[in-house]
Image (tube, rainbow, N blue to C red):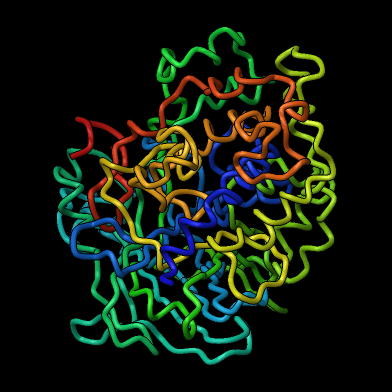
Length: 524
């Protein structure tokens, strides 16, 4: 039996487990400023991880990994904008045997070289204060006052002690790549889309016999969310957020924000192991354990740190929203410094989530939080993956984003914005699964179009427990039945008033849209 056939036969447990998983999540999008320490170090704040089978035509056997950092970038944030930290180590980790340990890591390092463009002022050549001295259209343009570059290493095995080798440019073998300057504005960069495209590289990945694609640079924030309203104790009338006609009634709060993306598109055979199609992924950022600021920065270089000690992990992200609203405030920094293999220490936050009760209070709807505690179903979704869907044959319980690479992608236009759960609901239940066209959505990986916010709102008040019914139609089990979800069918109508599906995206790699310019006309 094919992996895809096994998947379709096991979609009932998936629907149920997804309902439970999303029931513990907040109605907020990206992982922005989610822990006390990371608010002091935004350059190493990991905000999103996307992992999905590429839906660009002709690329269906490739996996796209996108790790975003530096949240809520104001497009007008000059004159230095949002360069990456040369003192940091940014990583995307892959577990391909289910043991909660990295088997493959992509490590990104950055360097920012100042060029000291000068103008003759009163007989003296005086360096200018800005990032640019004129129009920019090509990498390393003479008018750029700073050259941002990066390198990528692949480490097999332990991320600190494993076998390390450099990713190289397929055209010439270089180990250093140019990063585009941020979208300063349309006068400086008249066609940013064309400029950024010159920084998409075909690369050779050590141990992989199929060329991959690589891009690192600023992108438009891909999330749509009613952010301020949500954090203000869901400051919206229940009559509004339960009216499907108002699904896109309010502006996207972060529509003008940008983010920095590290994107890799690589053949699935280079990530999987043997016959196991499921891979897990998470991102991290690390700083040196001890450092002193260099009191005499070298001319042409930004201030760096004289560092010592081991790399210290300060950011971690797998599935969205986990540290933001599942992990309790006292343990948020601990989670950001932890490894998946040690996730047993956070089990209570998964089995006994607090957010449903908080939402009940915020919406002034007493006695509406789901009551099926402890949430052992959340352990399946967050810590092991769904059997027959995205759970590997052997698995150690741990939090990460998991993708079954044997489940094919679907074109963007056919993607269900509510992921697999939305597709099941669209066709009228699992009994009509043969009519489904999209089985590749969250939580089987994560695509930019998947509306985590609205899925979470529906499930947080037990909507899919209601669909499960007393006869266990969704295969959820006796712990999830109508009596465990007092809000009833109203839960299916919940939304945040902003539609994720209308966010502009690109049809192919690197998928996230051209960043909003700091000044001038709309992005190309």
